[in-house]
Length: 279
Image (cartoon, rainbow, N blue to C red):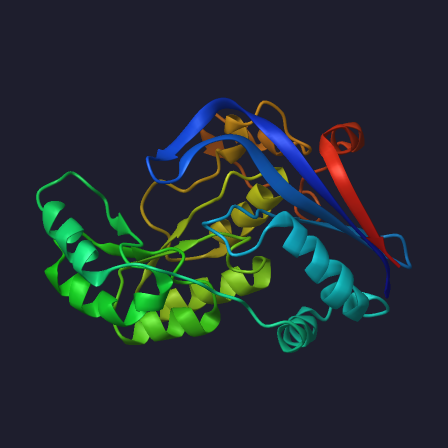
């Protein structure tokens, strides 16, 4: 089995109601995603989704297109898609991450002191990724569990945070952590160190949500509640049938092949405003 063609589509989907983030980051009215399809020479098609959301991700959708078209796509053509470990190593060697974070330890400490006594499950990402070294001190002062979100992107991040006992929870996102395999490995590092995981999300379409559902169902160390599988319920429409897996606020793991969701070709065309093909 060999990869013969790769396509990517940037889509924009309106939200049912505006999503108010904060005074600093404003309000989101549309979700953006890059939907990819990988075609093999024996007729199988794989689907994927990336969810760029600056400033919460370093990547923009244009950057995702550039990485696919100029770097990762050419490496994948002609390769066996079943050799995921080798392909991930190839990708990592070809394109390094470009990570940026800014923040203040003093402000984070003051915020942490102010959370004492509040009815919170945990405090998520109180420091920027670049200040991971200070999380241990912060955790010692915290009255609530500490969760890493943007701070736990790679296996190396996970190992470092776990070994230094800096956090209590890992917030996992399929896009942020680099796909199913890498997200699963981060979750396994967490399990080895007794850290719980929350299956979190960006404002995602059903492809990312389906991938996260499979990972969450397989991890033994999930946080007790709050798994984020309702992202498509914020959208006026979706390009997949993931919504059919949700009943009475419960997401059910599908028993059909692959991710267990199907793309709607008409909706993909309707909401796509840019596309590339690599072959």
